[in-house]
Length: 237
Image 1 (tube, one colour):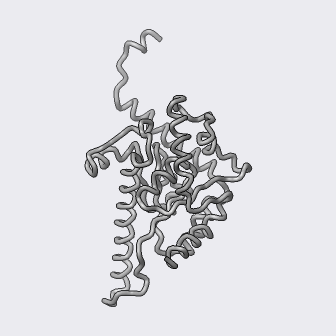
Image 2: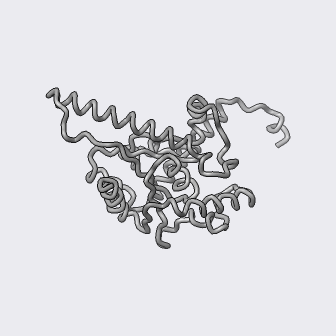
Image 3: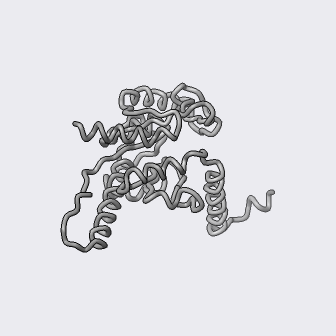
């Protein structure tokens, strides 16, 4: 062990090990997807043919790398870790996630998500119009609306609401084995690396976000109808 501790490991070796870990991480996520996850997304896409589906993550999880399951269903992804440089260019501000103590501090990643979503939406509309090639505006033109779906009350609901999203809290029934709710109860999930102070801060942010929940589901199959109801309410306003 002493010999290896004194030997410099080339950066290419470190990168190769990381790449192998990241690849297996995404393969494992594919193996453990909730059974109704894919069918739920497909149902939403059937109900709303113009929908743009994006992923927002606070880590290195990326549905665009889950080639055997989620990749065909997603249009883009943004990551707290991977989009650091874009955040600096956009707002000249970047804060480590574990140092954020208010929902406003989460705003940049959701503003970036909205930007990417609108770019994808405009590109899709442009391609569609070129394909029709009739030179007229079709009746499928629509007003932009963002619905954010997530299981973390503090980050998903509290953060996205600061930038105008309609929010759906995924608070799943016990049979799903969801652990996200533990943090807002002040309990420590087995996977977290947060300190006690960070855990308590997360709980407080969760409590502050309760009033920002627009809809809540306990089974993934309820999501398409929840989205439809939110959009219906938007049309009636």
